[in-house]
Length: 457
Image (cartoon, rainbow, N blue to C red; front, top):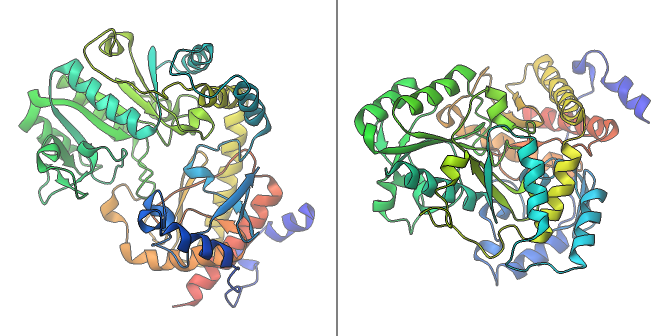
């Protein structure tokens, strides 16, 4: 079968026959029933807004199980999954090494609210493979890690203001749920009800890819800025690839003005490589934050810095941060198994090569068809954009109208057994579990879905 699929995709991708019509919709009867029931218990029927499928067609799929690169929903539909729990399942679902380690540790209990040797073991693995941090602190989520990093930066510098970039997402803590105002350099405006304006007033929001904005922000607030925070690669509002020179410029601006650089690696950490975007750009942040990828997809986060900066965290210093489930043994066990696998020689080279070949083939097909469609990519992360722009570096450059095309594409892909996150602003992920056979099947489905999208002019 693999040989026949290979023949189908060798040579000119434009020779693939056009899929002239939409596939029939998959059954969602059981998922729809579960969703109606869930709406009685949860706001919008979900525990995280994007899951409600408001940006795509149909009701949410209720996932029943996952294994390797596949997930199955409550109706028994099988999908090749490119969401991967929004990134952390770099080894795929239910990886045997992770499952075995978690099962072993759970025999002795699941939570103690006390130190365990597992915390040391995972910390050693992480620090051995990351030259950018000397000490770390585990948390229970990426949001919590970023929130703690902000507090640490303020405590270390004795300053209050934070500079963030429009289009970057850093979790749902109050001070970071802000958006840009109308000026080049603005105090943030709250982007969520329930966030006091006084909180947002300490956050300065500026556009990405704009050196002048960085310079103006520091000129105006120089001795008040505790830190600049930026995603390693902004990947929560499209995939906004920044030029290395720009990232180095931000690093230099922070140093020149006595502010810390916080690199939010919740998406990119251990996804681009063991040292994430910091190594990708060859910059040394002052504080780094990480998310659930370090726990094999279980609830965990982490922030780290030099021993000097981390010395300000309680109980050594005056910056308080705590958590009953921080460093819980189950998440630590999953992390040990996952990071051990990621540390194996050639892991990232093989994964990134496979992912780059996959997206390159999709781009060749779209280009040969003269479709207004680009695949932006970094390592094993990709983003489908209905655009003819060679680069999209800011959220303002994303064509909001193109999201209607994504809705059609998402529906067509679901009907062909391919699962992407239910929003055109979200990225996708290739995992080590995606074999050549599954990737060839996925490419075929994507080609057909694109033909349907662009036949509906």
